[in-house]
Amino acid sequence: MVQRGNNRRICFGAEEDYIAYAHWLKEYADKFGVSVHAWVFMTNHVHLLVTLSETN
Picture: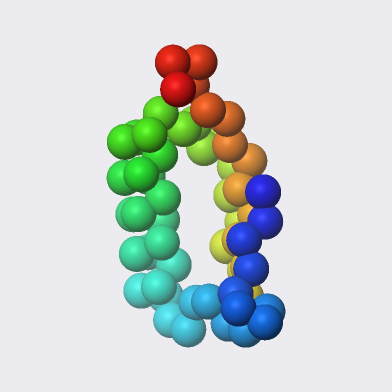
């Protein structure tokens, strides 16, 4: 999965933005039964390798 900023604009302007995104990614992955296997946070997009649990 690739998630891009609107019109490929910057998503992460500071280190705190990366930290907040990682926190929310874990929180909602746990909540919705998603396994996050790998991620790459770039300034204007994110790459995620994820799978849904079989119970979802």
